[in-house]
Length: 502
Image (tube, rainbow, N blue to C red; front, side, top):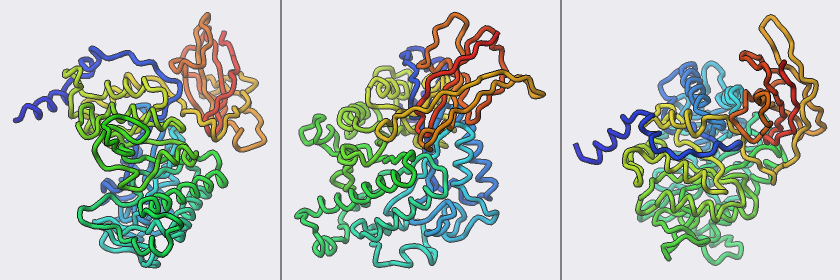
């Protein structure tokens, strides 16, 4: 066995206590995005009944809840298909095995996932792909698939079919898909990952030169023209979301490198890296979208480790923090890759601690997202355990997004304790609101010792976060001061209402 393999095995076997030996004590933030991606394209649903899939996902959500995850990015459109009852696209083969075949028991995975996430105080973001129409493994397309109905709107590239980003009809179609989701599902976000124009295939050109020649729109460079095609979609989607459901967040998870800077140092032009680029290869100008305010959050996929020559984790974290702070930035973490290599400064442990300590030290980095949910659940190298016992030890609210809405709801009123057959229940009156944006949808319950100063910025004092105006008291609160606050849809928090337990 090679030395690197032995080291990787030892890292996986290290007990949690040894990992904590020299761990830096990191402050616990009151607000932090703690997400996880649940994908369909890995085939985790195939060969299972719908009930077996529900059982599997329920189990994953339970474990993720215990690990402090507060947002799920749920893949519902992988290739012009749907893991929900779409009005426009066929059921996904990734769910039932055959594209266009609906679940036999009438199950709607997106509706179910929204409910299950909200029960666990998690956000649910519907994750879609805007352009991919067929992947390599798909051999049959349903009759109502866009490539069947409008073959002139797609092109072949490598093993893929791509909805041509140059066509207004495709932008309108994706907007219709998103509007359908917004109108019928109580999602908290619309999310897209890194697949815009396709990843380059050696020796193969994107077959859109004729479209550029026919309608260059004043652009002399086809790269600028392609970026503008994507820009138009992002702008239109953002405007649509704000019009239909203004509290729904629009987020992008780009490839981890915006551009490579040939000067080999970080600058606004790009990072000191050498790899595939959003700007030049995928035609996704993520920096422009942030500056224009067309997106609400960014999750760059910084899946590399400290010391990776072409794309160092530390270099990229600093770059995204320094040049993309116009909107909240969360770091996309690769669970499995993180635990396979040792911390360069402390070979006795893997890189999770160093990664989290770095990101929490950077002012514009406001959380992270786990690639992928099942890997986090499987707990390689005690990765999930470290989240549970250290970095996610206490609950966290979502980061503020004052550019969407900054008005806090009114505080609850009339708190009182009721004796019931089920035990003692703390109850209160919800605040009145005239607008949906101002309504209280959740409540935070804090507990402070008798002479302790009330500090609502301390997450260790949070007893619970509930979605209804009551809380069952199952612990001794004698002599404590209880404070209840209201949260609106964007988790703006009200002032607190106190009640003292005698």
